[in-house]
Amino acid sequence: MKELDWHDYYDAEQPVIYIAGPYSAPTEIGILDNIRKACEARDRLIENGWAVVCPHANTANMDNTNPGIYYRMDLALLARCNAIYMLKGWEHSVGATMEREFAGWLQRQGKPMAILLERSWRSVEPTPEQYREWCAMEELDRQTTEELGMLDETVTNEHGGKQSKIEHRLSLLPPEAVLRVGAILTTGAAKYGDDNWRLITQRDHLDHALRHIVLHLKGDTNDDHLGNAACRMLFAISELKESDE
Image 1 (tube, rainbow, N blue to C red):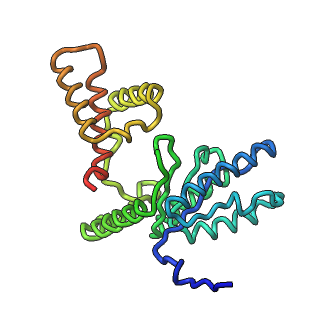
Image 2 (image 1 turned 120 degrees about the horizontal axis):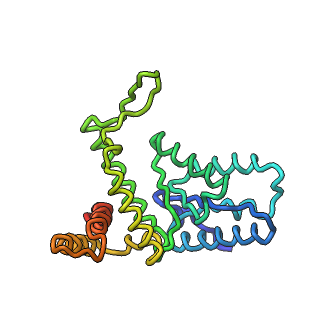
Image 3 (image 1 turned 30 degrees about the horizontal axis):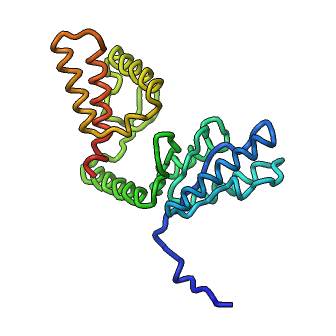
């Protein structure tokens, strides 16, 4: 038998992604279905070039009378990964919710940890190249923050409560306008699906925003043109970083 040379296969730069999502279910069929969904996501991510940790497959059909054993093992694995992939429905799972919170804590400790969500609008799974771009942007943000002296500053209120100082007074946002934008987003999601706007280019968002503004100036009252223009401008701003890349 021909011996294998590990030099041919080892890639120190290959990122590792951890799959988090529902495992437990009221019935055995439900558990098997959750395992199947996780394994299908695993296969797609492997095809895209990730090294994948799939805890659903690791503990499939094992004794679940002491879940703490598996939680400790899963967190130890997650701490060694570069990204976590949240399957749809993760927010209904106590285990996945804990893993999401742990990933956030790792980020705050300075570990590069991309938190990726499974989305219906995404035609393909995220790639390691996109993860590396994210890491580069995170490092750039960190360097910029340090250079500008924008590191989090702790402030203490009159009651002795401590928290990070923030520069943005979001409470100044006009609530009526925010509610109008929320209503338009709700209608749009029902018509086109959640996050459909991510499939639209920044230029298209700007064109539609300008159209709504012009129609408003013209006196047209057949639609909430200012509300729709505000939505489109928010989408365009959100797409700005991606467009610049």
